[in-house]
Length: 187
Image 1 (tube, rainbow, N blue to C red):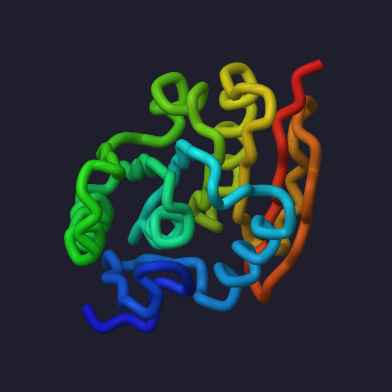
Image 2: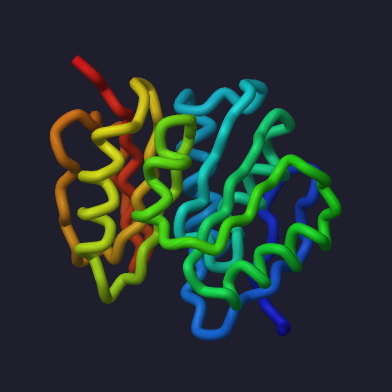
């Protein structure tokens, strides 16, 4: 599939990414802005990071992390077989070896498996189902470790607030996308 979606920066910069059918990927400009925010003191690119791309779709967010962060291990989950196949195809294109895991599963069901070890979690549930993000975060709050960074992409018209226990670091809108960047704070 011909796509304008590509890796923005890092060692795989410029590589085109495949998309599953009916995908709504985070656009290149919005993803670049998101990573600029992360690079402004939220994430140290040289840290060893476990990253979870929970609603992976094409895997663009997690693959961008692999390209930018040399010590990252990325977990990709998506419940749709075509999405996981697309992620695997995109990973094969960059040939990175065992630093990525793919799991065809529902992200909410996988919270107990991946949520307690992740340093950075990206969620981008379907825009037409904003309640999925709310449910995900409420369940994640019970298992996420102190300091976990969560990026919640939602449609800009949805102003769902985070639950208690999350500090908002950034709240930015880029066109139709709103990014809430939060840190888990355990009192």
